[in-house]
Amino acid sequence: MIGLNCKPLYIENAENQLYNPTLNIKTTMTYLETAAQFYSEVAQTPQVGLCCVQSTPLQLPGLKIPLSMQEMNYGCGTTVHPTELGKQPTVLYVGVGGGLEALQFAYFSRRPGAVIAVDPVAAMREAAARNLEMALTDNPWFESSFVEIREGDAFNLPVADGSVDIVAQNCLFNIFEPEDLTRALKEAYRVLKCGGRLQMSDPIATSPIPAHLQQDERLRAMCLSGALTYEEYTQRIIDAGFGQIEIRARRPYRLLDSQTYNLETHLLLESLDSVSFKVPIPEDGACIFTGKTAIYAGCEDFFDDKAGHILQRGIPATVCDKTAAKLATVKPKEVIITDSTWHYNGGGCC
Image (cartoon, rainbow, N blue to C red):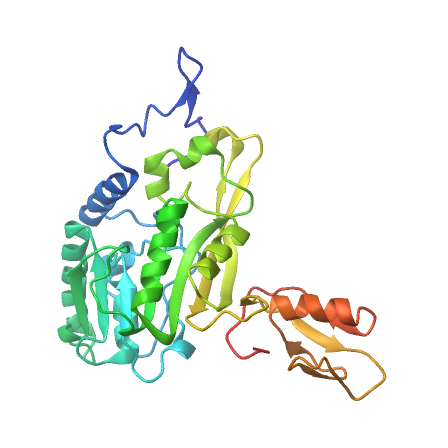
């Protein structure tokens, strides 16, 4: 894999310009065409651990995942959160990959047409279809009609407005340049029902990625150079219209070391699992839940901030980051705000 020998990916040419002799591609290709070509290649010749998933696929009773599907698990986390999957939701999965998460979503919905898997790459659609066919053998509950694979992309989703309960994508949107990311987020917002959920897993950068890496289309396709910072990423989601974001997990994903990637210092990428809700944005701004709590430590039995938040003395109450900041300002000596756990699974103050 790239970077294991610690040789610089970028060297200077005679004009003192940085270039990559190993991953050079035709300049006539757009970055999206480069990504499509790359994923056509890995659909035909799987690269195990391509996106360095830090955990094994979700284990569920009666669910057996074919080996070929596991080998094509090109994600950086998970978008399948069992608590979100009651009532047999209709799921639109963008970027089908090897079909693993489409199969996992089908496990919960178990009805024809419940999972619509979209991918612009023909080789990837074909590989997913083969893998899902193999899953029929070891999963008596599964029927091929449960997952419908369609041609399409994140900018033109082949479903009607307000027609799905969940839109999910794993390690795809980080490939997009910022303005294209906004297009994809707005398109997801379009097809979701009111109250619907955008369930994503993407790399984020702990500091801005330098331009010479952002401009490397092959590295971008490999989910190594397109990541935004946490603040930029969540703001793009809010700007697309989502009024609430819940962070399910945040963990180390990959290190871009200074020698290999021609950086001044090492740059850590993290994997962020999030669920964003198609609900109105409150007048005072969107709610982002990262696992913070507020604890009242005053003399009264409870504290009422007159804004819908009542804190019982000594008992942690889950709050969004916005409410946490307000409470810390109103009662700095009597309200303790705990740090983000980066693991939040619903409920809370809003």
